[in-house]
Image (cartoon, rainbow, N blue to C red):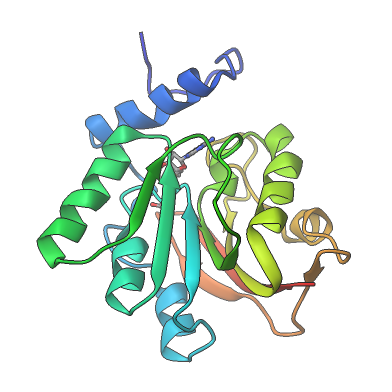
Length: 207
Ligand SMILES: C[S@@+](CC[C@H](N)C(=O)[O-])C[C@H]1O[C@@H](n2cnc3c(N)ncnc32)[C@H](O)[C@@H]1O
């Protein structure tokens, strides 16, 4: 039986993890879901820091950002292993007459046909177990072309446990290493999230 709690004993199988997320979408127990586009992304778009390109949204969930990027002329690929999440985005795209490539797959085994100009990562890293972060960071580095962008929001919970797992900024600085990524001198953008949580957003450039 699937529960809403992530237990230390929850098996780390792809199906176990997929069911964990999918059942939450089915029952609408989705506290991470803003129901709207992340204000950090709106700022990056309005300031033209992110311009129309081929972009990937991994762990896209219900994909408000996917629809907005498609509306603004991006060539969007969105990946999530939850069938509920993918079907929710498809309905929104259909209703708006927009297109994006939607892929229901496991991010750890999926391989894109071509690399991307940019990746928009929101609340997927913090949804993974910290022991998976190094592998996920390696995938992110492989998905972005040289000089491409990684627009990433680091979840701040200041609590132990998860998901969402706290993405300590110093630890993220070490995870997204200098040999792969150029870190800007600018301060991260703060995005409010659900009560007690916020995200720190930053744009890294692939070396
Ligand atoms: C916390 S939710 C965030 C969803 C969305 N990014 C948002 O901000 O609303 C994490 C998402 O990552 C997806 N996910 C987690 N692990 C995944 C994996 N290994 N492969 C594909 N999707 C995954 C889940 O299905 C879920 O939709």
